Length: 275
Image (cartoon, rainbow, N blue to C red):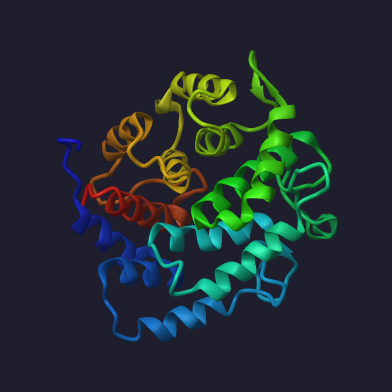
């Protein structure tokens, strides 16, 4: 437990003033404010498409895509709401599994190219396949359902084939911090990739990473059942120092997303019993 102080009241006030509807809903769920929460939750979940995915850029009726699907549901895993929204979660999992290829990797559907995707969302490249596979595997681990194990092993095998001890995964740093706890959870701490990957994570200069990245790293370890890992403690200690005078934690995506990042930090800190 860190001796550093967290001003949760200021953070809550910031979210209430700046947060979007989804942020306010999850804040209410975190705080146990049950008045009208169930109706608001069901209304929030209406964004899910009939195939189980969440639409591109979270625009109602748009193409279902992997990144938004994970972003939309990951906070509910941290909130321990798997039972309350199990039908929605199993629906999104089915969507994710439909997008696993024979070689084991996951990637966004080809038709996303018609919607001006970002560089890291565009299918067809090894870095993007590695990144997408890493985030899906980690999310599936957070579901805690052994019935997905064959899909997980297939994905881990794909990542293993794309691993180099001298360079890690040929992808974005996000892929590494999603993959490493997943390898530890599935293959064990003594696995060579688990050990080498953790060594690489521990060389990260955390000062170079925004709060939104630090809390994502922590989430990845929580999903893998490694919330007590020493690297998590290190991340939390750095993250706590990042709270600004007005109560927020800043997002790499700009101030419009600061409330969402602040909420995610609170969810994680509550999960880890820091608040």
